[in-house]
Amino acid sequence: MIRLSSRLSAVFDQVAEARKDLGPGRVIDVGSDHGLLAVSCLENGIATEAVCTEIHQGPAGHSKEALKEAGFEDRSCVYVTDGLNGISLKPGDIVVIAGMGGLNIIDIVTRCIASETPELLKQVRFIIQPQKSVNLVRKFFAQKGFDFDDESVCTDRDFFYNIMRMSYSGISYELGAYKECYGVLLPDKEAAGDALVKAYFAHLDEVFEIRSRSDLVVREALNERNGHENK
Image (cartoon, rainbow, N blue to C red; front, side):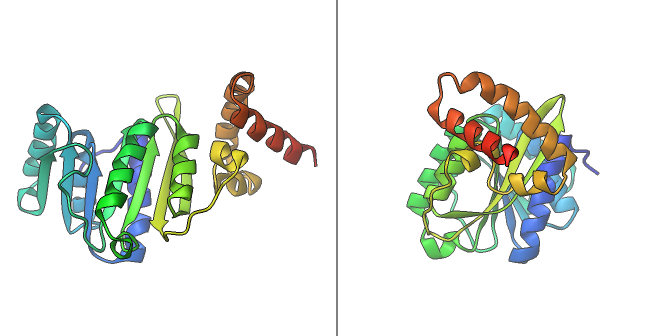
């Protein structure tokens, strides 16, 4: 059995939850991290097939070898492509975009939305784990009509990671500075006493205190948070 890092384990958990809503289907791992997540999804029966994409041949080769060694060569495909280019989505797909910058994620999903019908997108789930620009990612998905089904936090090698599970409705909305910066669902988890989210927010408070000097959105979010705490 594949052993996943804490970060990939948290992503895997969100894939497993998404599968409960969708029924059988594929997992599409964009930037497939040596194929570890894809193998684990197949081993645990939360994917009927796995599709891995990599922008470079070398990493794609690693993913292909991992799937072959695990005995899933006949239930998997590995493509050398940019994001989801050339990959046609199907009902029941779970698209994972993890471990890359937020602006890259936005670019990949923008192209995906342009190439697929709204009806199909509503039958797909997206698991997103950005390395940076998390606030921009949240704002983008809200404006593009994605609902946040869940948000979670994990730590891996002393870094915090935020994982989002989303479904498409096509109805655009605005989050506001506080939810863009701190999360859509995470504030409720903090209020409920989630220790890991509390630690994550304490970290964000420190980071945002410095960034607020030059970033108006972060300043607004921090002011709103402090207002909440003072009530």
